[in-house]
Image 1: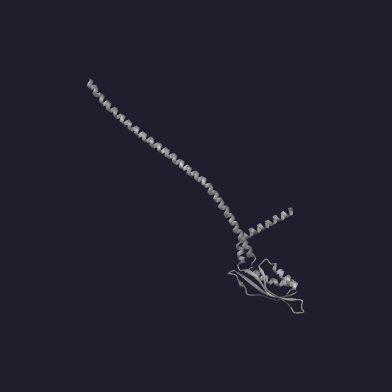
Image 2: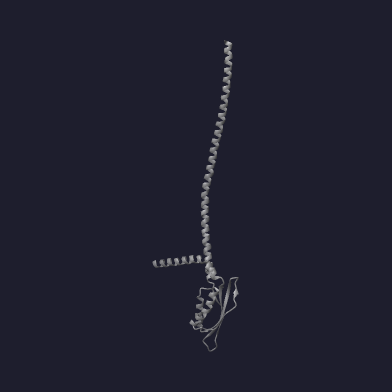
Length: 229
């Protein structure tokens, strides 16, 4: 009986030992999983923290970028205005040149001005022009006037009132004769001409209209200020 009882207890002990070994495996596996989970959790927190930090830096940096971009746009606008101002000043200089048609009209107008001031025209001829490049040149008008000194001065002053670039060159004045009160004036009128003036100004019509309008507005404002004062 005792022998049998002893034999029965041995297998039971063996089964119990096996179950303990099986449970220890689960404990090890569980511990490993827990460690891995903790690792991934900590790693995830670190990654999230780094990502947020980078995003914060990007967002903070974007403010500087935006400010810099705004400054660049502002500077470009200032430069653009300066370029437009400089271009319009150049256009204003071009307007002082005559077109070939304006030159012919100017030459023909001298006869009318001379009659207005009782100046006799002995000769009025177009001379040889001087080239200033491909599109610019100085056109010359050779003249000989006979008049009183005062009337000659009036005529030349009237010619000088033109808005174009006009110079009187190489003028020589002498008495008509020893008994006359009239004088002979012989010289050359130089006129600056731009061949493509009409087409150039047509291509710049927008900027010309813009600045012309601004000038008129400034004149109106200044006039109103003077009235108020």
